[in-house]
Image (tube, rainbow, N blue to C red; front, side, top):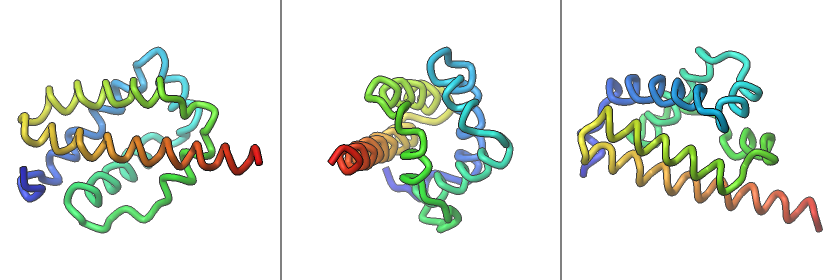
Length: 127
């Protein structure tokens, strides 16, 4: 599915709906609420992130690895799995199957990269 079919409207609809579910999740909610202090600002950054990832907009200027390493005690395979599960559910409910699959494929690769980066950080610290 070409990325061109995904729009900013899709991202603006998806990101807040997804993170509303994350915040209500009994496992992920407390983690995210403990890490995020300004949800409206953070949602804007996340929309910029997904715009950059899916549309190559270049809007996101942050360092996601640094932010996730700060929360490394919560960066477990189980928590990543739950995040991806909620992501799949939300994308499938809000987007057509082709768009949902594109967002899911990117999220899978990003989650794998973040997990590897956090593990690298742990290994360096332990050495």
